[in-house]
Image (cartoon, rainbow, N blue to C red; front, top):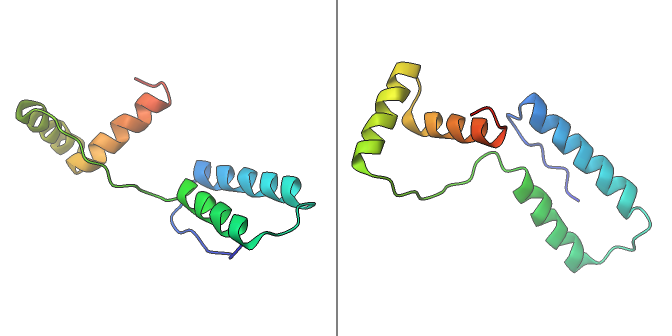
Length: 94
C-alpha cells in the first residue's frame, strides 16, 4: 500500500488510523498479494479516513435561518455548526 500522509487528523482519528493499520498488518501478513484486491482495499482504506465528505441536505428555510443564527452566536460557519452538532449526536452527547 502506498504510504500517503493524511494531514490534519485529530487525536481520535490518529488513534483510529493506528488501530486500523495494526489490524491490517496483523491480519494480512500471510496473504499473497493480488494486485486487483490490493487496489480495492487501498481505496477502502483511503475512503475510511477522508477528512470530509460532501453531502446534500434539504431543510426548511426557517430551520436554516435558525441554524445560521446559532452558528453566528457560536462564532462558526453554519456548515461547521451542523458538523459539530452531528458529531455530538453520534457520540451521544445530545
